Length: 357
Image (cartoon, rainbow, N blue to C red; front, side, top):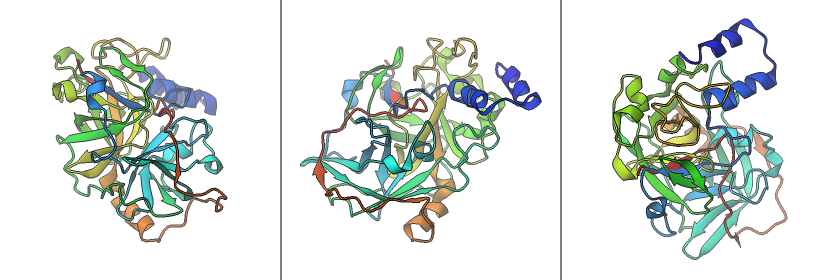
């Protein structure tokens, strides 16, 4: 495989932490962007056709300004308690993230944007960071709010069955967007939704990228345009030509965002990658990649944390049985301040969804 030389190097030499980070961030997971922009959705069709307006069902999907940079670095989803947000652990552990810097969670509602401070952060104890190439998994975290979310914000339960493979999921994302032939090219502050099919458990990718993905930890899907030559999982013996113009993939700005199956949170946006990553020029194999660049274009692969695997952890946090990773001192600011949402972004190349054309 194209990554064999990286695997050999990792096994036979003691690379520095920086070198290993570089291999993972711009190698195995080409979706990791150095600028920490959270990913938004890229579509097969026109991104303007998939904007989600307040009051249409996804008001419980929120933006997170993790790094206090005035833009949305990550996303999350409101859980049934109305007090907890499900998101990705890497939003708070990688790329210089500072748990003391988390700004309020923003709910975009028909009446305006309401912000509520974060009181506690719970990071799954098995999460080792984006650069944990020996045992990648458990990229999941929960935020506890300082006060209950507005009633207008939808609450979402989690998907608990293990039959996700082959099912259509609805992905929701903020931030940059674009069209599948070009990838993520448009800076945007709109929430969008698109669809994709979970093609396989993510551990299948351990055979083609130099990362050991834990069994059951993630769900994987590719970004199809209906052409066999751009079907990434078709290369791996799992052919599927996609969902047409509604097909979407994560891109910078979507990290921590949800994928719903039957209205339940089945996946949490984690990372993205491509087959045949070239460590010399940071390109992808073309085909299946449509443009030979890791940019959320057709032929690339998205990876979500498999929520059903971590259902008991979610339950324990909501039941008050888990000690928080970080407890944030009560702030002096007032809850419920109306904010204008900034553009989405974090970056491990945080994902966006793209629409097929």
